[in-house]
Length: 205
Length: 214
Image (cartoon, rainbow over all chains, first blue to last red; front, side, top):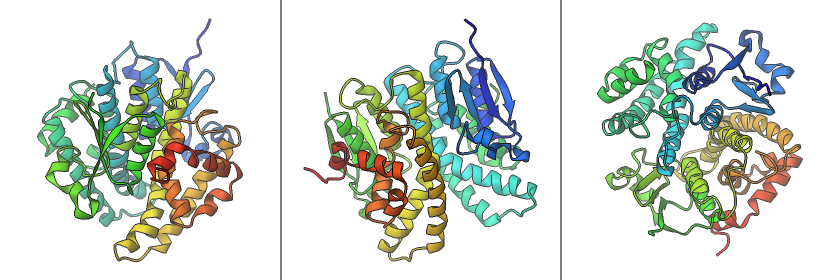
């Protein structure tokens, strides 16, 4: 029986694609990468929309299963390949619940301001527009509040869900990477002792 | 065994999500009212439970948990085998439940909550509705609901032919949009979305969560 390799449709600059790639690497899972040419609008063509009606990257195909939403994909991979590579889900019901909790925090409190800052400071100028500094200010304010909470949490716990690296930490990698590099907002991280230590740890994996 | 303690408020959509899940799983709980109008959710006593100062939070023995979707998932797992199954059986089914749960959280929630905030909560606090913001978010929601219409023409519920957390997560905002925001046409104009909405909103657990049945 020949097992088909997982097919990942995505683009290297896409943060959501990067999240899935990171998870595949953590779980030591082979995959085939199918480039979706964003600049050519390939993600909005019928061929791709048939896989993902929302027209965003990434999407995976694993046998009969087609799956989109990067956070759902990484959860699926973490479950399917439990027992190989890094364990990302937590062991007890309580640990798993805390992983879920901090994953939700990433998705609803961290991601929106972080992605808005990325959009305004990097993507808009790239497309010929101008950065709306007021919007950037507002979202830095929001991110500061969230990172203050992370600082408190990480002063008591090595990683977000507990003393083990999990999906909750992994989900932060792509956005924080862009904030620190392309957006030049590294001070948000480096000014917070425990957040800085956490970031240095998880970004060196 | 101490009962699960739910800190929340009856009007809070996220609290309703958790209450609905508790009823679906037939789990007893104690409800602790957090007086939003008195700013109780921003007081040190509550922030010690949930540093984000939002509702709801649960306590189950040693575990304190916030984020309504994480709470619902925890309850669905812990009480697997009693009440309604909400997670899917196979790995693939569970993945599709996760996928549509993420769609709710990332594509549906933002426009729906903005519309609710502008139409209902802004006037309640003495402000006036930003009609342009409502229009913009109604258009976003229409695009999402068009995709749901296509999906639900092939599948009784979002993740498959079984009711799951993915459907349950839509109840609180859809209920407000239809009942209090006058946006029922978004649902009723889409045949399969309408049938799905009528099905899931008539579930006894949802009626209990909104206090519509004793």
